[in-house]
Image (cartoon, rainbow, N blue to C red; front, side):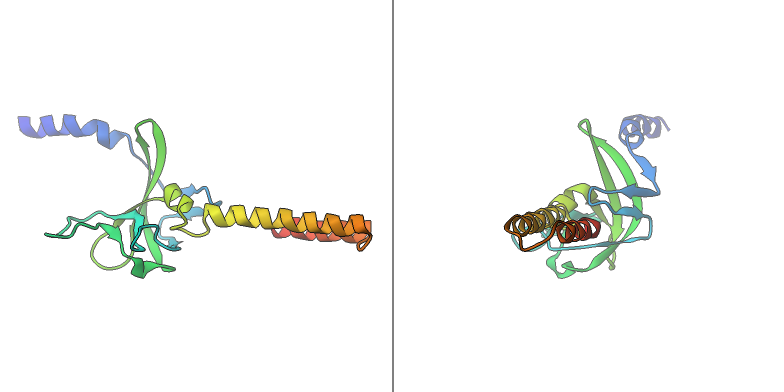
Length: 164
């Protein structure tokens, strides 16, 4: 009995740092809920595996890679739970996800978004903003050259900003 209490006391700080949630609005602007499917992009590992999706089961003998394999590119995983962790003073959001098969995987969602392992990702959002700005710049050049009227420029600019 004393051993169980001792183990409980040792594990208490680790268990109390995680806060369970039912939803989370990630850095890509998507609000994820339990049982939603997270869309995957491409793995960021050298072999195409997903570095931010790590197997939660026990690895077998000789199984060095616990990352989700590249076969899941452009696939999806189902969210089983959402937790907010405090890792070394940094707030991280962890999804436990199920890709099918036997094991669940851990997914630090914002890190995966940054690496474009999850889509929409940070890079695609930055490209989209950049492309809108580029289009407005082109329209401005057309306005300045007299190819567009002010009304046409305003209408096209408004349309581009609404699409963003």
